[in-house]
Length: 363
Image (tube, rainbow, N blue to C red; front, side, top):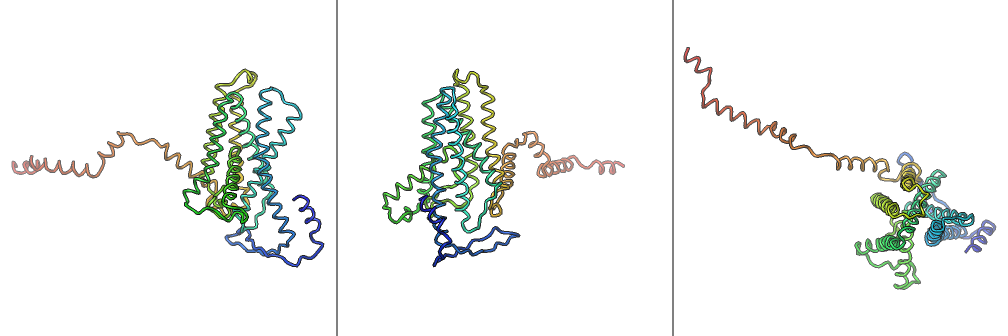
């Protein structure tokens, strides 16, 4: 594929292509108005776009099914041996950069799939925010898993399996709930069994990504493109809340059962640093979606509005109920009680007689 790409790239432009295709893309709306722009795409450029998309997908697969387990294993060995060599540190840094790059490509791929009708251009500030967001998220996640596995070797297996199976079966559960027919249009050459295997491998990759970070590409098996193109803020919020709770719980277990290996490590400070690191990842994610997302003008609601709604909801939930004394006072001051008191006083006066009338009769 690489040789073919180089051949097409250096040969492009030398010979005039007899056929071109016209693509229509809408520009980002300005003042509520969006223009539609036509662009001619030659065969060579179309093939290069196809290869570029394939390379992006391959980088995601290599990152989360290759570099992520490798980084976790190398860091685990360094913790047990209490030593880190220069070569191993270089390989770990390269593995981390590979995972971050794969997550970044996943973000860009999700944006281009969701907003395929628009001419999307990602600015350097957006790349920087995504890089910092993914770096903090993946680094803290790997360190938390390694620390927990170093003191509770057996219990790391249930943690990994629960995460893997949960994210593996989640798209299938949504697919069964939708009661849609089985997708047959993935590849014409594949049989029903081959299609099932391809979908299982795709969901396995999805589970591997979510093991270490949030997958920007959300699967939707009942969609023809197999991708959920809607921006689901609720699912994103639930994921990061549960992941933060899980990381905090794993760090607590490491703190309780830590061995003499961590004798010269300030455990409370390390726990605080890791939790703050994950919070920094969430912070850069919010900055990206609020200020740097290339299609933020198309959002139905911004991140700030969502945070404000969450704060209002939390304030409403945490608001203390009114005391019984205040309720009793309110009942005493109600119009019904006032009318009853007035009627009772009037009845008493009629029974006892009016004092002014008795005085006038005596006179």
